[in-house]
Image (cartoon, rainbow, N blue to C red; front, top):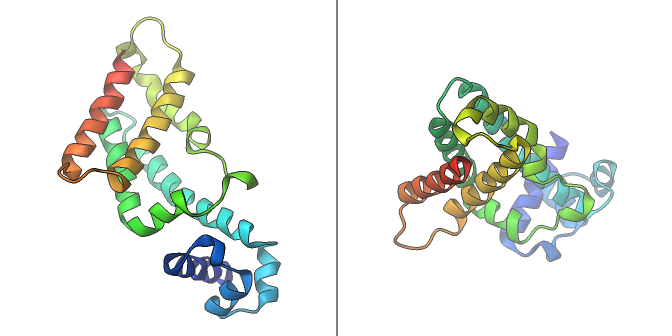
Length: 185
């Protein structure tokens, strides 16, 4: 609960200003904990940013794994549509935070694992039953890698970078078409 309070305080501060203006003292004050408690769990501000990313990725992981389990016997089209739908749903819960995590919060330097690497095996497993529809010569690892990156990038883009005039439904449908076209190529 203490860690969640500190992360929630960091989110509040992030939404009020830039990441560079956040300090561990301000996090402690907003979370209602001592600065010693902050340092007990996080050696520095960057560790808090990594934890924010990890918490977000944990939510995404839960949704992705659940969806892949539910789609074990589904068509490839249903699997792709479901994954895009879920990525969009996860990122629309708090669009502002999703945008800030991608643009404002540093995280790469301290070991946050990219989405495509973290979920590579899950995507590979989900694609394996569909290899017959990919043609005779297929590198399943490459397809899983590219598909995971496409789901991640397009899922974010549909929510965070969709141009005016492009409906959410159309953006999701076009994203699915792009992924399915790649997989069928």
